[in-house]
Image 1: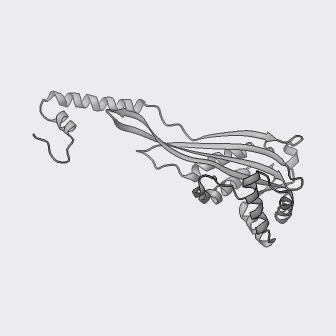
Image 2 (image 1 turned 180 degrees about the vertical axis):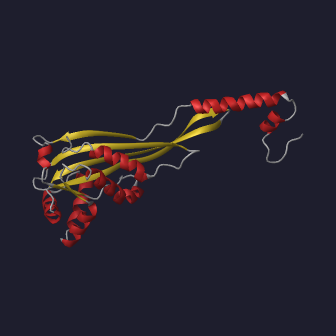
Image 3 (image 1 turned 45 degrees about the horizontal axis):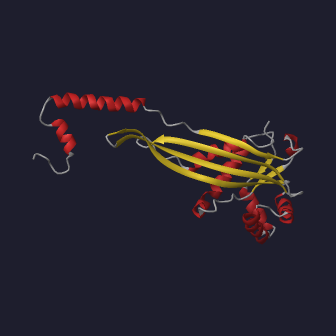
Length: 241
């Protein structure tokens, strides 16, 4: 009968009436705070990578004095909205791959785009990209012209496999979540193609994760998580000893 608008009936029960409820309430709050502090912490930023293929006779010496051009990343086919991340991913890959001074010269995607326009290869590259979605093969003749235009023996074809963000509860009491964690994950795949022979010489996958407590921080951006994935992928390049 003493319920007020906007007040929780359960809270009124705790704080009104019997004074012993005050002691019980403080004990309950203490337990919740203590259990929250003991709840498992969200995992820190992590990086994982795998080498899926390395062509026979290819070693770190194969790329010495050579150039590798980064092509525009392929977006997730069933999620066309992921295309907005293409330029960001290409830039992060360039930065990560450029961190190995003993490796080949890395040509950024922006330079590749400029070279394609200057050489009037736009239609050829568009057709090659369209055909790749159907055949998973980059045509040798177009690869050769592209390699000459960008002055690169090799090209790197990245592909965004996934970008996911999930929120899960870590501490729940009476149906109420006290600790929530947001987990972000980015997975990317890449192939290195020889523009002279038309062969795939290397393929690998990189994955990056990041987690934060919802009540304490903002969600991890695509760039921050994709950076972890790019760095892990770069560490698996065939010229890295």
